[in-house]
Length: 457
Image (cartoon, rainbow, N blue to C red; front, side, top):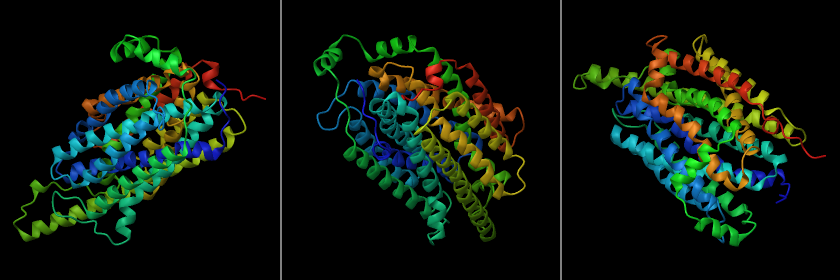
């Protein structure tokens, strides 16, 4: 089927729900480790506490992709029913996360939150491939990245900005500051409203032959057998991209789980205080704990704010790509390889910076990699697979995102960085090396149509 060439604003509307999705991911990525530490987690245990996130992605994304391929609702279409279900669940979870009274409840809410975000996110990737002609695929994915960059930057700065407005950034031992609670509440509202905006402003193509579509759904077979079949027939380009994705997402999981403890301790000299080391019944020790806790919470706010720079940088990257790909073709492989290597340099620089303000440069370079990760692999993949299976293929492809995160959470990060040294800052060094390796793995990709799609004359 020949698809209509869409305008910028039509692509913007269909991608706008990613603003809310990224609010959820940015608040989760920037502040869950802070929540865990506040509730008493040791920094070495944090990656394991994060394992809920990739595990849910491993299970949820292929299932949602498979189901959305086989769904057609007369009013909501194929992908939008899943946007709505995920938005409702994610908004509830975002609101409740910072109110967790104990560590295990916070870890449970992370599990629910990530599962819910994945319900909304996976169909958004497939929607771009559903709606856009091959000639607009790169353009569509970088518009998504532009919106993701905006969401990352704004959400990452929310606790800092709310504190700046005068909301308290201090709390009793084991409690989250009010600034964090309000930030997550705002995130819940933005998630819901942005998804609804996309649902109400975007239509979907119905199956070309509805009768054949219904017959296909009735064919014997199970979800498991279909997934196995699609994995077995995976295109070679998808396998090679899977290797790139493995090292890319190992690096970013390392950042999300350990950047806060690493940077508050190494760069800001304000590690999270351990309550057990203070006798809270002695006034002077209680005051010392509160002072150390205040320093840590302020440093954590700044780490979150600096992390927001990578969202701003990815937004700039996406804007340049939007302007360029609207008129000309790009070499996706070279763009992605160069971007990942620059991001790796950004991570490595954290060990050498002379002052915290230099983190702006570090995260700016990381943002270039992030912008490319969110667009180039999907553009390359969507040019290499059967459009009728786009949802399930995107779900399977996202397994290459969650498997490295599970590897990292189960001890991969701790093992790798302790080969260099005991301080958690070495985790950022490992992230840098991993991202550079990911960049070099792009040299394996040889499919010309995946590398660069020639715009029609």
